[in-house]
Image 1 (cartoon, rainbow, N blue to C red):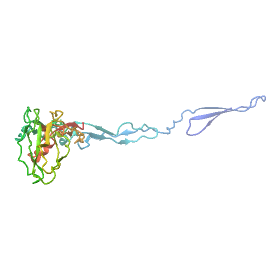
Image 2: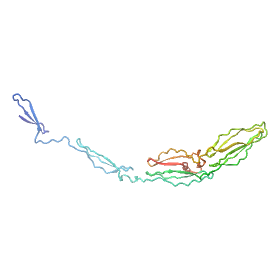
Image 3: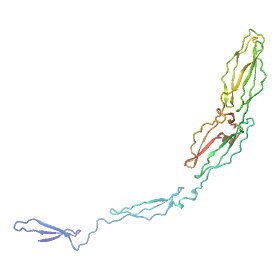
Image 4: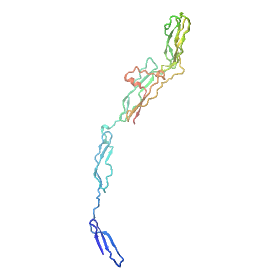
Length: 339
């Protein structure tokens, strides 16, 4: 016997149950079959899909400043539900457009500009082998990534090409007053180098001379005691080709001791030829860059006066004010940095 059962209002499936009767003691139990009910309405799904929807993009607007960028944005118009697709994509965009840069931010690169070289400084009348100098300044510094100034700020050169100059000694001075009135004393005279040699013949001979005086008897005669010669000095600075040494009378002669003139100071030619070119000091370290981009860095050096000939000595005493400050850095090098 077949019997159909409706399993519920929310389902179109019914169950067919067959009651099986006992026949001859062989069959027992229950038999079931499940199927779709006809002419029943379909059920609604458990989740109705709702996808995410973006809002339209806003207009582009500048980020201000001088970075040259614009931006736009959009929001979420409708969010998705648990079975819908979420929104995929950017909510904010940035771009570079011609209208994003304010007029006052438009750069106009300007290169660094040197002034003209100043006239060469006048040579010193007292030193025909001195130095002449000239300098220049930065009139306009580099701006907005313009090219920096390159080159020297100052230049120096000798007044004239050095020739051969021989050493000349002055005439002897007058004798000094005798050291004693009796018993034997000494008196001296001296002379100096009037013109120093430059690639010429050096002076050689005594610069101070001593002779006996006051030889009247005051007791037993005895010779003078003369000190040792000092070490040679010179061969540098103002005396590149001359050297000097001297000695002193430790104790004058006594009595009627006869004395001959004695040399107490003398000069001679240096053993080695002095340098003919200016000796430069080493460069200083580079100064910190003046800017993170388009800047400049500088370093300096000087003339080593002790090791250089006299012609390299610079006399800045006659210069005043700003010109003197400029010439104190007469050898300066500049390079670009911050690129």
